Length: 330
Ligand code: UFG
Image 1: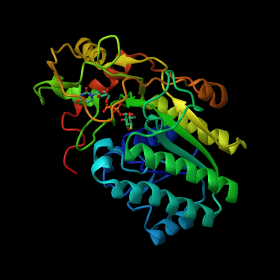
Image 2 (image 1 turned 90 degrees about the vertical axis):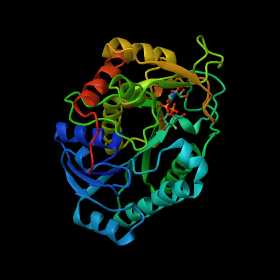
Image 3 (image 1 turned 135 degrees about the horizontal axis):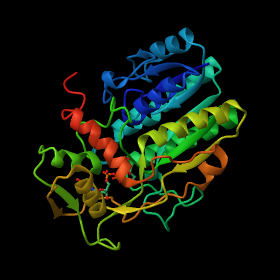
Image 4 (image 1 turned 90 degrees about the horizontal axis):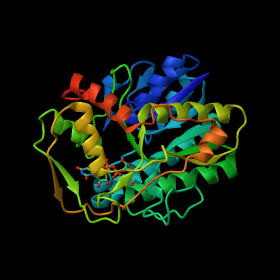
């Protein structure tokens, strides 16, 4: 059988492609515009360099391959940028997804696994967050992901396209073999930034505020290994193939760590000082985001295997040490 992975050259997409290839059960086809993805991150499969909004190019992808399931990552995902350029997010994320669903419908493809986010919840009413909790995004990025989820719901009602939407918390870490890792440009995520300080590429890590209502005043997040996320996508494809119903699932470890705790763990793992300074809060950061992933465990049979923060940071460190310039100049 053939899986199409959109955004398969991106961070989580490339790790999912690696997992699909390692399992060897599927032919893997990748569509990526390479706007933010990296060709070198694609370890195998058949790569089409094209945009989801390019109708003819996407028709060709579905015509040339016997695709029975889609795993959809292709999107812009910078929270800050989404606040200054909302049109880009509605166009690429929402309209891009509409185009994809239309092509799937034309081709008779009835299964999609979707890369969603904890940003759909906004500032949660309580933690751990369950899937039935209020969704009230604080930024355009989260708003577009929620719109994409809801669009899938109506395509299911109208056309029977079944979807699994996976709302991840904070993805981090890298492939165990050190072949691929996290390289966003610009980098805005805590773990890679902290490791850049350890590598001497940055002077210090700025901690965005220490006056939040948490035990050390810094924000709490639930860090989840990127390969555990990759596992969940494969399980979700299996669920849909075996006739499973559509659904939304949180993916996290269910344990929160403060920014200070992440920096401290990175100091232990790397053996470097990693100077840190408190800087002003970043707009739109909720104080605490922690997942309840009980539904994913019960219904997908998912179990995170690299749950410790040390293991997550160790795998990221291994990749950053071997690839201090990420994927380099492509
Ligand atoms: N942080 C710092 N300093 C930095 C970078 C981050 O203190 O230089 C803090 C942030 O304030 C936050 C935590 O570290 O408390 C994690 O920040 P990231 O930017 O790594 O991740 P976010 O929690 O902001 O974002 C993640 C996903 C987004 C998603 C969001 C949902 O990466 O895709 O969760 O809130 F939208």
